[in-house]
Amino acid sequence: METLDVSNDRAIIGMLIVGATGGWPLVSIKQKGYDYTRQRGNLIPIGAFAGALIGAGCGILVEAEETGFLWLAALGATGGFFLSDWVLRETRKDKTSQASNFSFQINPMGVLGAANANLIPKTNDPRIGSSIANFRISF
View 1 (cartoon, rainbow, N blue to C red):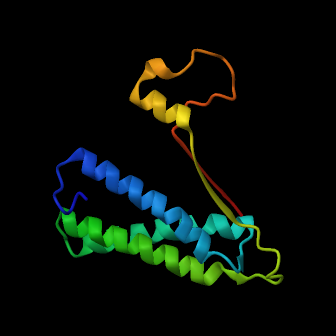
View 2: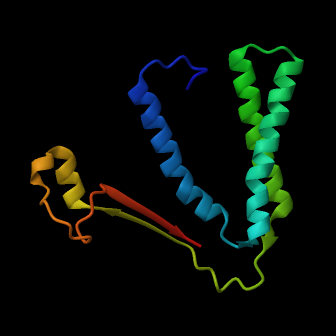
């Protein structure tokens, strides 16, 4: 969004929320059928970070402007993520034991509280949450 010169903060935050919310189910769908150990799962973000550093280093070497530098770092991070995922993933041996689940819930009391704070009952009851929505992904 910085390279596209978007100056509206609400549009930037909205695109960040849409991208993150859309990414979770896509990752869940993509990872079905593969088995990652904890160590391999930790190496994938390190690969993405290393790719971003390589992209940023290439941006410094070619003396790119700020937008080119950001694009090279983003492309490097994306390439590092996919490369490390491709190298580290292992096909699941027992395909019948897939236990991934995506859950999305809306809390009506949280929605009412966002509209008008006086509508939320004043209580210490832990069953009455203050969140508007809840996401849950289990693997």
